[in-house]
Length: 217
Image (cartoon, rainbow, N blue to C red; front, top):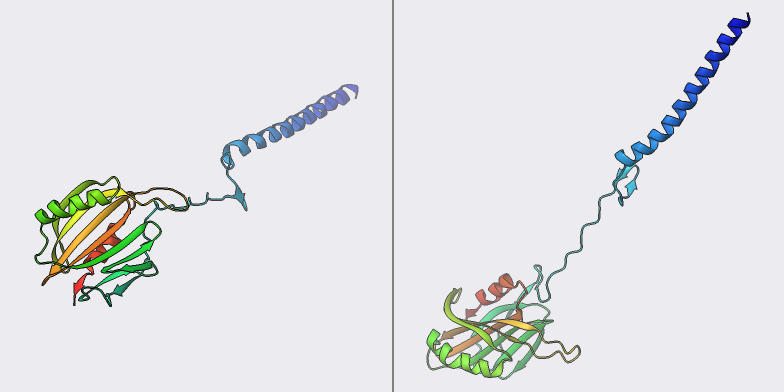
C-alpha cells in the first residue's frame, strides 16, 4: 500500500507541474501574438479593425483659379469702342479707367483695353512697339515671346512674358507673374486682352476659357 501511495503522489505532482507550465506558456504566447498579428505600431483600431489614416489635405499653388469658377458675360457700356463681348470670372473686383477695364481676384487679373488702330497688329509690330513699351513699364520684364494663335474670334497676336507684380500695400510682398496678352482687331478697332497670375499657378484652362470667349458684336 505504501508503494502505491508514493506512485499516486508522483503522478499528482507531475500533473500539477504540467498545468502550471501550460498556463505560463499561454501567457507568454498571448504577448507574442499581440506583437505579430495586431495592428502596426502607431495605428489605431475601431471594433478590432484597423482605422484608415485620414487623406492628406490638398493644397493648390497660390493663384490657381478653382475648377468650379463661374464665368459671366461682359461687354463695355462706354469707352472708345463697345462692339465686343467676352466671359470674365464671376465675383472678381472690377475697376474701369478710360478704355481699360480690369477684373481682379487675389493674385490674378483680367485686363481689357480697347483702342482705335489704323492697322491690324502683327508679330513684327508687337515686337517692335509693344515689347519695348512694356519693358519700361513692367518691373523686371523678361522672356517675351510673340506669335500668332487661333481663338474663336480668329487669328490673333499673342505676347507672353514675365514680370514682378506691384508690391502688396499690406504685406509688402512682390509676386513673380506670367502674362498673356492677346491683340484682337477688326475694322479699325483693337482690343488687347491681358491675363496675368503667378508663374507657378496652373491657369491654362481658365485663361483659355476667357480668351476663347471673345466675340465681335
